[in-house]
Image (cartoon, rainbow over all chains, first blue to last red; front, top):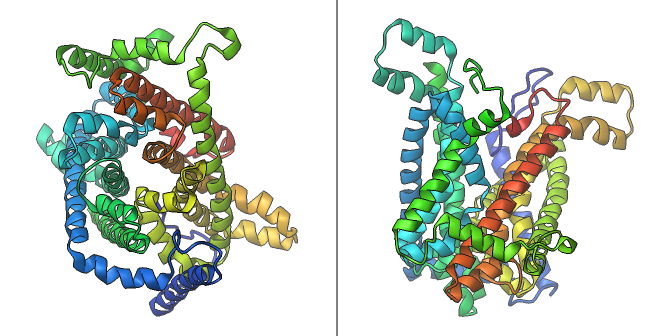
Length: 267
Length: 272
């Protein structure tokens, strides 16, 4: 959700050397961990709520070598990927097809905006009733959660296609198929990729929520079991690992987004 | 979007034009609900009449809403409002600090990135351990889940204030407070609003999850009670209420955003 900002006027601020940036990042992170250690050492919170950084750190290898967590994580990521591909695939297809027809796309936008306002996690109990406690429930609820996001971005991208290119394509008597594949889809691509990036984060949140609220497998389920077994240090270790996976996914998709935007601008 | 198509001028025609997809979806729900004989998926009309029974009365003294409504909804909404308010104040504060100092920003961006990518629901078991079964857990979840989004957007806005404006402000020797109140924050407001808008959606999601997971009152709690006691039509009527709350909150935000950014040509996502 961060927007890259370029200074149009005024002297550009001297950019930090990458090595300095990394060093500063490490220092900042270290200061947060130091504050955490201080809070624990001073005894401001009970060890049962917030274990010390070192006990969480020593829990990390245990969680990783256990196998249960890794299996859960694989399950979570498989659900996440399935939901994201189903939702993106159908939303892009629908958006590209309907986005060029204003009579349909405008009321569709109203419906999607209403749908988007409904907190998706509301439907987890229904998904449990309809799909059981397995993986299909997680995929269903997460697909429902991110479909509107990708669709909105696709509709938006299609609506903002360059009018001159549309005229040019008409002048060259392009076939409908060619117009869709060579004009509509590429011009909507940056907006679509942004939508997928936002959707990927939300999809992961929803999958993990579903695991906490009922599903019988996945990283969230393992996390709950640690908490119920009062191994709060291992629960923290799980949270940190899940967060790192989230950050990794985000970094990959941001890179993909930059690549797409650059490619489209070259064309 | 496209202005080439002539828009109907009559109000009713405009409403039909804008809402026919919504009507179609509701009709589809009705049809599927009637055809399938599962108790889990009642038709829309049945949910509506249940909704009227559950939440609406004909007593003007309680604003035509049932006691049941007044027992659950204010609790949920106040958690949402308090949690989100904490996030807004803290997020804008943190964002201003990050935006004004590039070094601080570089230092803390990895950890903020980590907090943002953390699926917030994963914090639930930990928050439960920390705050127990009270409302504090819900507040924490909503506030922590949205504060970083607001902070990074604020930082983007604050870091991007037009240099000429800053130089002008400096040569006018504006006192610090005026500089922030009259130049930096207004200039950053479109970015700040973009962050707030996304965070509202997140806050609603987290509000519901937190109440499902562990609480003793509120709408999410009502839903999980209905589910556990097999009262599925009541459960759907509670969903409908949550959906309406979500839509109303988003519409209210649209209105505020449009009013607050009126001076800007670009009115944020509300234009979309």
